[in-house]
Length: 154
Image 1 (tube, rainbow, N blue to C red):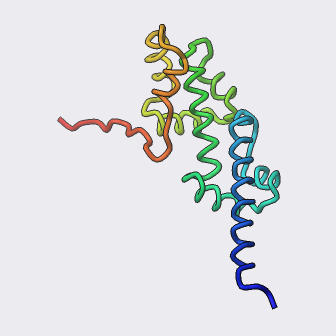
Image 2 (cartoon, rainbow, N blue to C red):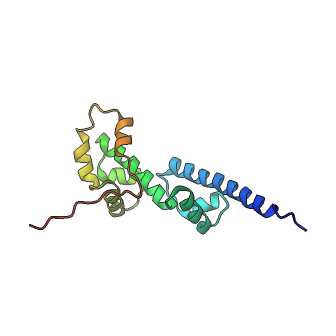
Image 3 (cartoon, rainbow, N blue to C red):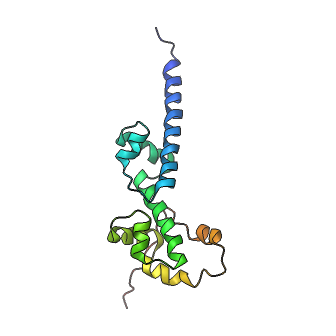
């Protein structure tokens, strides 16, 4: 007969193992955001099913692996756009997005303005501000997506 606490110990050990694997997934996304990544490939890399990875990642970090990846890509895109030496299309592909339309839509949802407007607003304005400060102040935060101003009726 099994000891009654073995089930709980196994569950706690499994949770620890899952958290370690989730950290590896998050670290991989942070490192490889510009590469083609999908949930199935991320899950295979840590020997989990895609469904289990997605559920556990959301529980641990408050968002899906895909949403986390897109937030990292948009964050990096913001830095590249602030530099001002790349076009929006070049930035889109540099951060790993394959569709300019999807990139522009997600950027606008998270930042509040389209990438071209963001680039115009920040190219000259960021002069003299350390990049680490600009990055922290302008960081997109999932769950608090920017609200695009709705037109006012006169």
